[in-house]
Length: 79
Image 1: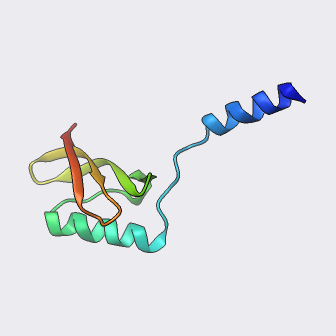
Image 2 (image 1 turned 120 degrees about the vertical axis):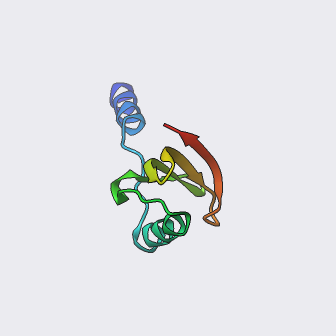
Image 3 (image 1 turned 90 degrees about the vertical axis):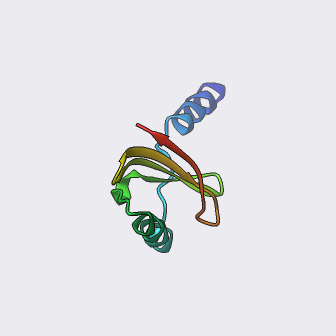
């Protein structure tokens, strides 16, 4: 059984990041629209109590953006 447990642990570590759910996606898209930005819902990932947004397209370029649990921008990194 220890081999199975190690295998299961490895599979858990390789699992894809958690996707944001329904109304959360809508709120993220609303916040971005207010900034003049857009992102594919597939590029919104739950990260702790907030959200990591990949390949966000804004008028001044493409960014990686992190939102906290209250949908406030905590990080905006050019790509």
